[in-house]
Amino acid sequence: MPDVAVLETFLAGAQVDAAVLALRPDYRAVLLAVDGLVPGPSDEASDALLRAAEAAALESLGDRPVDELPRVAAWRDAYRAFGAKPQRTRNSLEALLRRAPSGLPRVNRLTDLYNAVSVLHQVPIGGEDLSRYAGAPRLVRATGQEPFDTVAGGVDVVERPDPGEVVWCDDAGVTCRRWNWRQARRTQLREGTTAALFVLDALDPMDDDALSAAADDLVTHLARLGPDVRAARGLIAGAGRGRP
Image (tube, rainbow, N blue to C red):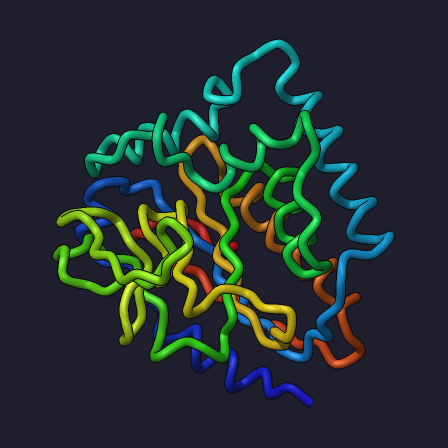
């Protein structure tokens, strides 16, 4: 049976660099470390959750462009603050919301679940294979020397982030570029993933209660993915912020 204490120890090492908080003092993230997941393909439950997310997205958007939603606009501002162009590199929430009218992707039940929760709560969520981490997750402003393994033109390549770019990393390199834009191949969820790390990123106007509710919802849905699912929760935030 999964050991929650091990998950809690892993999360205790998570950090956000002061340079990131100087850029956005309103930043907070809930990290969920989960073990005991039973992999499986998309199923009726995950499809129903995605359909609910698609309907919620359409209702939220109405006749408005995606980039006018307040939480999407906040992330576009954050991207501009470290030099990224949000019209070219969209945060994960915006990317999903833009796909919702024509249908969200069906990948597998684990990925489907967190994508749906992301859209339902309008919060960027990253999902990664916990077993492939080297050390604890850290959110930093890149030096430009960190390795990031990805695919370009169908070929495996190692890229480097731009100096000053906000990236998630561990001891082996970048795990996600541009805060919540693109994940590394090394830690991406796979068909056989049984332990995962989920990162829920928040900026104002998303308040602490809304962030906590999103995390609660994600944990509730994850619990159905196996009889021995166990989860630990951690928060990284600037001084004076709440504790979801």
